[in-house]
Image (cartoon, rainbow, N blue to C red; front, side, top):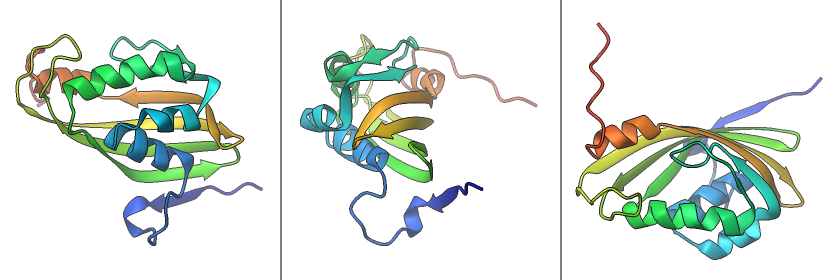
Length: 156
């Protein structure tokens, strides 16, 4: 029988990074370290549904342009891993991100608006690297918050 480990990140004792994905979100997204991309994403690793168009990238060199565009648009991005589940070679994380739209890296003129989004990511890890990743994040909400899309009216 296999068991799942579900732990809210906030109650984990002070340890470096419980999973590779914790390190990925901290060093790559919150700190913008491209060297961490080279270290943590396998040379032929595939990231599915990555960008605003839902495309996939293969390896660090295809991933970095997306990272640069996002950080050019949101240079103060801070990602927090809220929860994670780890089983075998897979890790799933639920995350949130707070940022300010200070640049036009996504082709949208900077608005100075604060943006909060959420997402979930799954990674298949082998040899200490992300071999494959799947992402589902709230692109629509991000575009609403920067003013590109009209706000969706609340459901009654």
